[in-house]
Length: 429
Image (cartoon, rainbow, N blue to C red; front, side, top):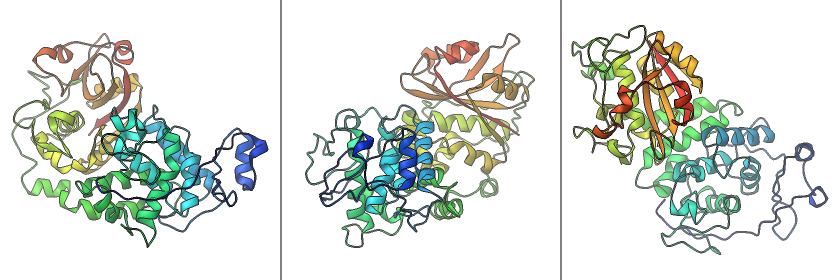
């Protein structure tokens, strides 16, 4: 975010033993007895800011506390989302803290989680504000806190940032008296992230949807409608075909029993993100060269399986809203599959399932962490498997010095261990 908003905050008190917990709901007592610890926020008057049974009336895609099925469901969904999305996040198992702060200030806690994801990858991005300042929200001004050398607020810990940031959102954006009072996420982003409003809105709503869809009535439809409103310029797969984007090039990509090759028969569509034809083309707030491994993998999968001849910059433009500082959102994959009529399956980390997909004429997108293929994180395509069970890749990040990654067969053990396998998605017609 760019603009500075100054607000005040109340002192936070963490109660960690049962003898100190008081004035709490029965729901909290039940969970506390199971070993789930919650914040109690003492504002100097009484214990008014602890987790309670309070449920709001707000919609899933709104700024105020939502009308959820239960508080415990909301806590669990936040915990599950954070762990599934960024298992190394410092916010893992802090769902109760987000919810308690949301109740105290009548703010949608899923919104606050989404801000932490959008700005700094839930505390996992390798940035100064994360590593030194513990500011995963991109906040630049809260009274009582100092700022780091880049202007972001310095917190003692990620945990200690949740309450004051939630109050910051409440005072500045949710309350009608707020400097940037907003009635929608999109309106909020015009002030919070003015240099990328539509993309920031879609990322934020996507996170909120994942957390709240199962526990808020009509959550999915309300969020998806808002996404549709801001994404209308992206078009649909039918519009792409009508505009000539389906490109009947005469090239046919037909999968063999063991997958696709890069040359000769059974050739697949094959692109590199550093190709000067599109390396500098934008993908979200970045370029294809900088952040395009995900969209390049999507390009190869769709063009191959649908017999298209679209270029990576076309997909990068169409799905720009799915790019973040940490790379492509995983929600990009079901969206693309739906748009182009492909069957997509989340394969977890099952390479045996990936092999089945390849043998049935499909392709598999593989996500890896830092290891043999990358120093951070990377997405590639598993394109073939040989008779010995070794996998072959189409690596959008390959250069002349790394071409071996596309001609070498890798065992399942190598991909899991040295390759640091993270996740797999299968695609087929």
